[in-house]
Image 1 (cartoon, helix red, strand yellow):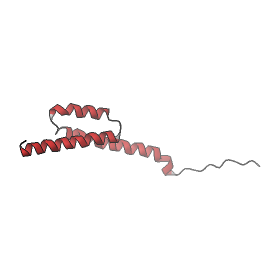
Image 2 (cartoon, rainbow, N blue to C red):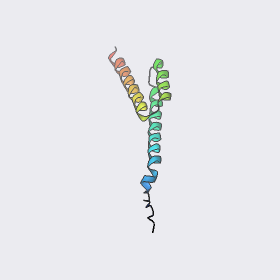
Image 3 (cartoon, one colour):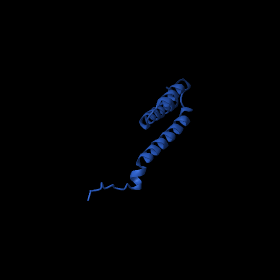
Image 4 (spheres, rainbow, N blue to C red):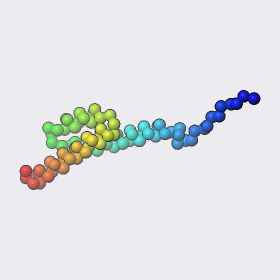
Length: 86
């Protein structure tokens, strides 16, 4: 009698793991992109195109997060400068 190779059946989680990971990444990128588009309206005009170009070149969630963090800092500084009359 020949030994037949045993095949382990995959769980639903294992089957869907790759797709789930991609869907999560896309969802995060969409949320970051929407937030960035909204916040770019609050950026000084001379920097808007720079941030838009960076967004178009962003390939990862980390790239988008870095851009969004910088936009938030820029808006915060712009507001502080305005309030302090600097």
